[in-house]
Length: 134
Image 1: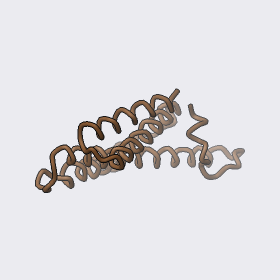
Image 2: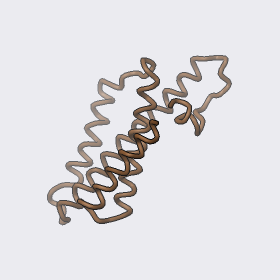
Image 3: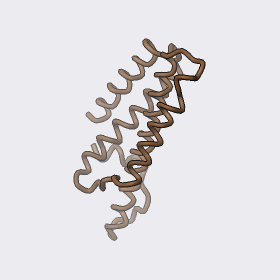
C-alpha cells in the first residue's frame, strides 16, 4: 500500500509537471522519481514510530534553508527562462533535496538500530529494507 500511495503521488506530480509546466519528459520523470522516493521513505520513517529521532536544531534548519534557497533563489526570477519551466525546476530541486535527506535519514536510522541490537549480524542497510517496513 505505501508503494501504491507513493506511485500515485509521483504520477500526479510528474504529470502536472509535464502537462502544465515544462513539457519536458525527462524533467517530469525525474521530478516524479524524486517525489516517489520522498513519499515512500517518509512513509517508512513514519512506520518506524518513536524510534525516529527528530532532526531539529541547527542541522534541520540548515538543511531546509539550503534546499529551499537552492530552489527559490538558485532558480531565480532573473533567469531568462519561462515561468512554467522555472516552477518545474524548483519542484525538481526541492523534491530531490528532501528525498535525498529522507533516504539518508532512513539508512542512518537502520544502521543505528543494527548497532543497538548486538544479535543482529547485519551492519549495513540492505536494499530491501524499504519493503520490510511496509
